[in-house]
Length: 275
Image (cartoon, rainbow, N blue to C red; front, top):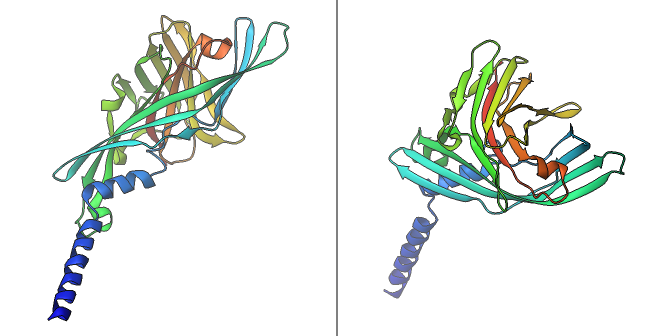
């Protein structure tokens, strides 16, 4: 009798452990997010450029960043899941500046920023399938801004192409979603015109693609058109892989003065180069 009771107790415990360790839908989606290295890794690391303004030449770059644990909110309704992702990026912003005939000086500023994006997952299979049948379906633009000081903002982004295949105005990055099967797509090497509408007239805007185009990362300074409007022309890359392009806005003081803190707003656009 005692042996039967012991066996029964073991079976009950095994069932309880099995139920506790069983992966839930939220677990499956969270695991997909944590394993993703393309869309859920928004940061402004590994970029730099040289620019001239007034009486100062500056070579600036962001150093290696660390990150806090992301905040991931998952809301599941039926076979759809809405995800909000947020993560802090921390490091240093460097500006190597030369003012008139003075020697070069290096300004080291603390970098603290938060990147956000949203996504929609769909259950396209069965619960018994890998990841319980969940797949990433749609992704928003990502949105980043500095934490301690944030005075600059991108109000909207206009994208047009020479072939007229793309002509869009984006005003709400976190609520603008793209199907992964039909991302914004540029022809390899085609000319793309980008216009940023912002709240800062005395600022600087840049494009960073974060994809190495030997021997340099592609960095495009926008032309200040006045009244907070910045425009640039970019020739899309040649390799057909999905990626982010970041449109990066900073005030004059961040790059060209020692006392100006890191002040940043950026939108990250998911896109594809056609094969």
